[in-house]
Length: 260
Image 1 (cartoon, rainbow, N blue to C red):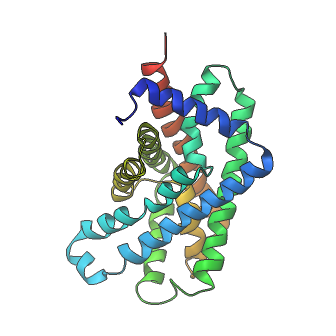
Image 2: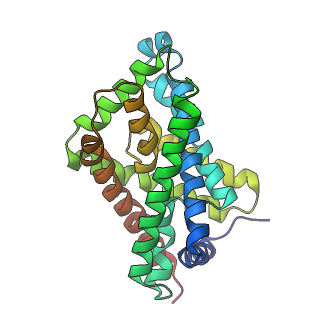
């Protein structure tokens, strides 16, 4: 069975966005916590695999990014296939039904806020319960790697983080859109893999992934305050993610492929 055309994919995305926007509050929160946990799982795996070969990475600077990028997409695969609620994905999916006036702007903002908070809760739970308490990143090259990640993510100007956030969610929402165009599991998994691998390898900023990286770095002793975590990274990355998903994917795809 062939993949969906761009117009068919837009219709599918609009229906998915409408379903997410009208989902009951309890189910929405549960789905968003799971999505945050799924992305955190991919984030932890990207640390273990990507930073697990420091000698090789020192001689081959792109190797760490490539390895991290190859395994990180498992989080989005789980979100897409299992139907969880990811803030960055919803940035694009809720735009077509909003433009079509099937849902209100208030409904969209409420959904994004609740899902953002739920994603944060899920990512924190994985960071503390399944990584910090189990000691997965407590030894070897990982504490130093987490410290370096935290320093890199919070040292750039806010406008740079925002631009990197645009790039990250442009890639993530393109992956979601591609996955919606597929009909088979393999097509959906491949659609999630390639664009997400690209954003990780390019070093872009994804706010939900950083809800895992930065708190975990703090748990492992990184010199980072909660206020700096938010002001220097998570908030500007969130703004960039909204622009990248809502404007560059949701709005762009609706404009190009809407029915006359």
